Length: 118
Image 1 (cartoon, rainbow, N blue to C red):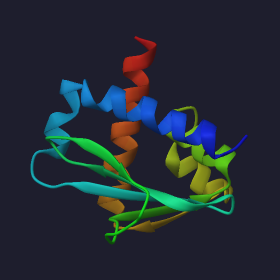
Image 2: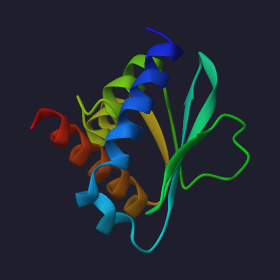
Image 3: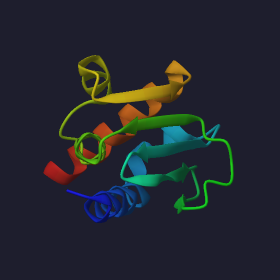
């Protein structure tokens, strides 16, 4: 499992998020940026606000959250198969950032993974 699978999962998450109007209230007042890091690659930053969602491969800005771990754990997170807090407790990922941003990201992932199964 490598960065190609993770990139595809990120693109799937982004496309779901762009059409999930029910999550707009979570993004009304502020944006969220999340940098995903793995030993397999340098990292990728996802920016989310109420107008758009996009990826930055240059990591040019300081993110709200930094999530690091192996690609399989990051994939579990982005696909919504395992909650962020569970992966963190197991020691499979490391998360740096404000707790409210962690909760916001976890809510967005949950809402989008729920939309895929409905």
